[in-house]
Length: 429
Image (spheres, rainbow, N blue to C red):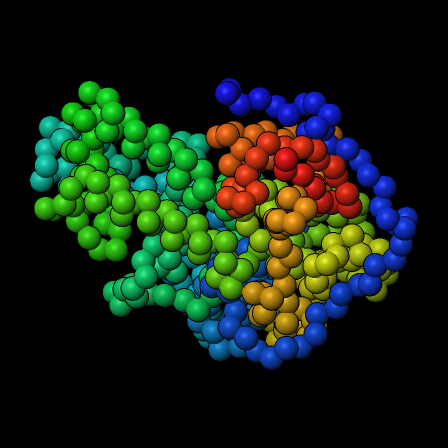
């Protein structure tokens, strides 16, 4: 049956009153639980001007002060990070302080390395018959989407999340703090692996089930595979099915890596005095959940933090909320003073992330219901679809679509849905 929007009463999202009224919710404050292992990749999400770059600089300085080999990676021509760090940030690793390196991602320069790899492999298999060799990399401009691809490749070099084995020839860091040029790019990055698996399935079908695919795909696959060399392997002497399997396993491994809060930690950052900044943070919480990622905590960044009412932090329950010290951006920061003013709550939040994640999906096999945590969204923004004979749900909210696979014992048609206190509760018949 063709997929359709569940618009009937059985699948309409209904507003439901909260049991017992609004009530009061306790404010969760982070408490010291010892110095656990920090996440490998850290980033901050929030509205422009809310303090993302400053938060990234504070986090990088904190991790380095704890003796962790840290790298601050920025993806913007904005000089704020250089001003705060007190050092020039170039497109290659530069040591800025003890245990702390910095690097600026510039896509126009990063394009050259993958192009050179393609040329080297093409010279061996002669797929393009010299056309690729004639391409001058320095003449190429940056197209939409290239920033995201190149940033992933750059982070891979620093973190080596493509491989299960350590590559001694490349420098690895204990922590990489990534200051992306905007939050939307991070959301695309978080959801990229799951989306890539869908595209890969269709591309594989084209390669194996069409005449042009069977003709062109073996050479094209070899060109791409040998240029990327996942796990250091080449395609020599291997079947196409083995290469497809390798790519699928690679995407799965990366997907698991980015979904693990002990590896990849996203934090919200906002100015608690500005309602639009708070609303944006709530929205990005929901968008991150929809993209398949986790938010590990929220930070307020403002000069008058003691004037902030408890109500702002309560909006982010059950997530932990803390504050970062305010830094003027018109001069280099006094990092000794800044780190001394960093609260223990903030340190714990930055350090211990694996136990601070609220589950985004839960299944109740007795009631045959699925509960999806969807903060930041209104019920009118959520659409529910069902595909593939009742084996999964597709939830659309904001600019993200999320597929939830149902356990075998719970598969079936949607019987009803309601929206209760940031949760979409779907009943399966």
